[in-house]
Amino acid sequence: MELAPFGFKSTSVLEEIFLIQYYRYMVRRRLFSAQYKARLSDKFMDLGNLIIGGLVIGQFISGKEFSSDLFLAGILIAILCYIISYQVGN
Image (cartoon, rainbow, N blue to C red; front, side, top):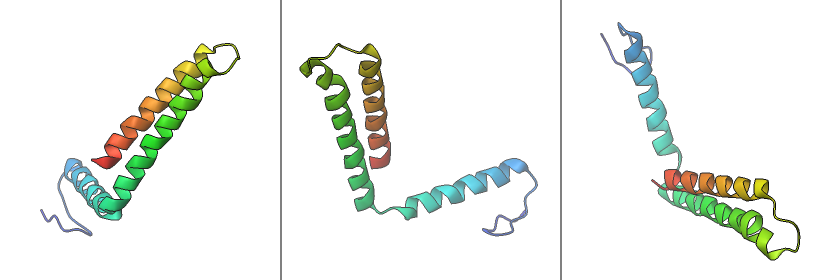
């Protein structure tokens, strides 16, 4: 059994899947610099803050009728942005 980077020969499918995942991980680790990751993380956090301001707090400030659909969508999208920001930053 040889575990070479290209054209490796293995006896099981699990080994091949492991190696494919390992190389994907290595490519992702080297693809973005730490400075780029930090900036992207900050931008996702800013996007979450804008969504909270626009879809959640904005409904209370405007004179229009409260929309629970927009409120819940704003909360869920903002939480998603915060989770992505955390994942990108780490």
